[in-house]
Length: 226
Image (cartoon, one colour):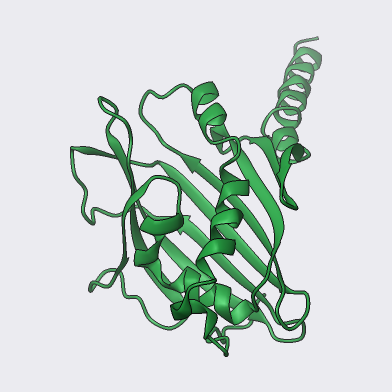
């Protein structure tokens, strides 16, 4: 009887696991809106108390132009949500070169809430058969510019997928999860960032019109996508 009870408890634990983290990881995307052909989605995730977000939309520019914008990290202050500082990091510990860039980003918050910052590793890859370019960024654990006046975000993951749809059109898929940390309620963060993914692609549409990007002709990423 004891053995039977033990097996039942183990079975219950496994069921609870399957319907908690494992189930949440498989949660479907929920459409939350559409603006000028850009469709936005969110979904819960076991990685954070805040929702993961996604948007898909076509940008009237070739992949090389959008790549040039993404690699221009300091420009994030012009088009990324509440970004007040952005820079490529290049130190003995964090060496940026070629298709790997280490980046530092600060998100402005309204007083008395502290600003949020993160250091991330961005990896660029390309599927040479299709011309699709991928950028994946993960937040990393480092003491670089660690400052008590800011909260270091505990989890950051960002993906851009640039799929060519003709000589001057690219479908941009943007997927992001950013846990701001601290004591901010998850429902409030979700409410404030609900349309952030849509606005991100909308901002890219505007930025690629600038001369410094629109004249880019060649994709510089060479690392094959796995």
